[in-house]
Image 1: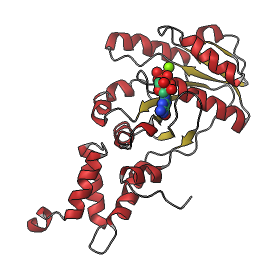
Image 2 (image 1 turned 120 degrees about the horizontal axis):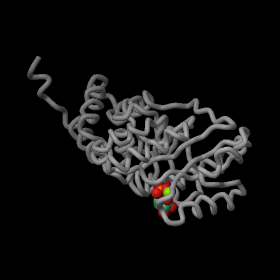
Image 3 (image 1 turned 135 degrees about the vertical axis):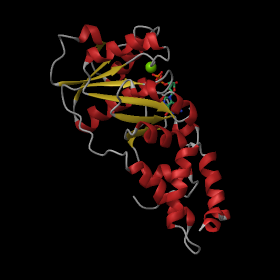
Length: 262
Ligand SMILES: Nc1nc2c(ncn2[C@@H]2O[C@H](COP(=O)(O)OP(=O)(O)O)[C@@H](O)[C@H]2O)c(=O)[nH]1
Ligand SMILES: [Mg+2]
């Protein structure tokens, strides 16, 4: 029935605009709206339905079984300023205090002035050993999990080639791709081939306190088909790397009241 498909209810139209305003990219917005329309009829609460659909969308890519084991090498990648170093420090603190693991902080960054001092000061604060990754080779004990910071993911293809060779050399057991929620969805989607080049296992969304438009989470998870592992909202290495919560993300995007459920 052509007439019926052309008819868009004002509620659906408003929701569509809200999703775009939250920086969910147009193609994902359309997909979400299609799913919402299937379940929506007059008398039902459109926001509740939208909340479930948005949350389900992310659940397809969520992962709750990340295993941290002694001896693992875990790489943090991402663009400049994304929150790699802060995220690494937050995870280190949690692995030590929460799981009682031995953790070593390391860095592949030989470009940024004071990159090593940065890792070194976090190591001091957390009372953990630290070393540049090249110095670590050979003397790494298998009982320590190594978190490895990296220089910003190069946009330039030639520089990226060299960067990827160094990453591959590490033979990481796990790769986190950190992105800032302040980045525009469209810019992140434009960089999707660059992100894919590091074969990330999990995503970390940072800077969530600095914007209420969390659409970039949908663009990253949906375009890369990679699970969002953690989300974080505090500067520096202090604060929590929280387990990603699809329902909280959906509610924030939809500007809904915080859920009372745990
Ligand atoms: N407000 C806020 N600031 C953050 C967050 N994550 C990182 N930062 C800050 O953003 C800046 C860049 O973070 P950093 O971890 O150095 O990014 P890197 O370049 O990817 O290593 C620093 O000033 C951090 O303190 C966050 O979740 N919220
Ligand atoms: Mg850094």
